[in-house]
Length: 358
Ligand code: KG4
Ligand code: ZN
Image 1 (tube, helix red, strand yellow):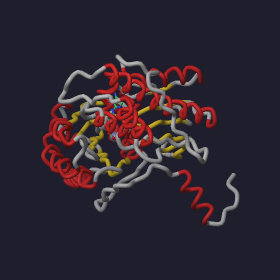
Image 2 (cartoon, protein in one colour):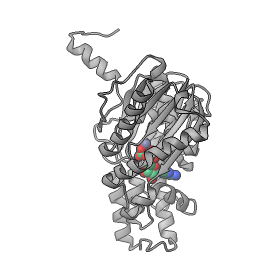
Image 3 (cartoon, rainbow, N blue to C red):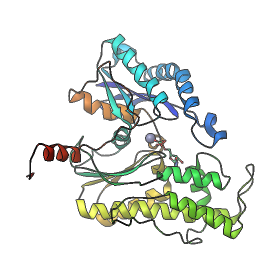
Image 4 (cartoon, rainbow, N blue to C red):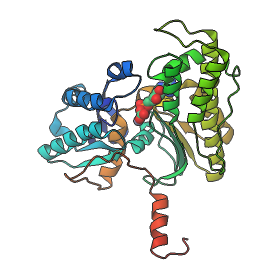
């Protein structure tokens, strides 16, 4: 089965052709980083215009690289949410029009579910139940996945996403955008123990994350120590490198300790770590150590599949299409789409008057 994936939820216009949900025939990603860089973050209006400009050439290139014609594909998978509404609509409208013109099925895919399926390539098949940490610029969630397509959020961020914290800290240190890769590079030359940041914990004892306090702690440290942010691409001082390493250390510890705690409670058979922040080498290293201690396999996407791409959307969509799921032409973008369907079932059962669930 050949599926075309389309992803335009944020600042990457991407198209990919995937065979049987596991083999990438072609994958094209047009990044808008250069457009948004000078604003230090994604500007939604510019993002949607850029998607409009790029969607046709990007999809055409995906077919050219695959050496396939449009008529060769069996279905289309497109990101339907969550994301920026103007950006999502470009992909959704394009996918609908193409599916209609070709007379083939199409299906809307949750972007977060797409990130989970980014490990479907270049890894052994996922064994269920699985535990997945999805950590990007927009999301930081841990899911328990008892079987394919069933998701329960076990931990979530109460404020900023981890990637957002990397971006904001990089911005306040004058390091540029996106912050994750720059902080990771500087952290290699810094001392992670130089500044003792505390791992944020929730007062109510839930395993949730919080990263905005950490950003405030970094700001306070800069003010109190008189550290000078980097100006105009200058050479960062040792103090900045130490701060980058200490910040990265506490983010990684927060993510991995929670992952570990949940694994000991839920007994998954596979651990998954995906999303833009999963590019981070330190996070991968510490996750591997944790997985080894738990005697569990941990799967990461290859780095080009960690950040937003369309291959992961095609992989998730293939499972849906094979299960007979179809979207209609009235499909709309859903900016705040969630990926949790287990508690919802429990909620529905409660409402229906079921007192016990066996
Ligand atoms: O998945 P993604 O491309 O887009 C969203 O869905 O958000 O993730 C982008 C995020 C950015 O916040 C970026 O700073 C972060 O991933 N990121 C990293 C690294 N590479 C990208 N964070 C930490 N270390 C990295 N090496
Ligand atoms: Zn993403």
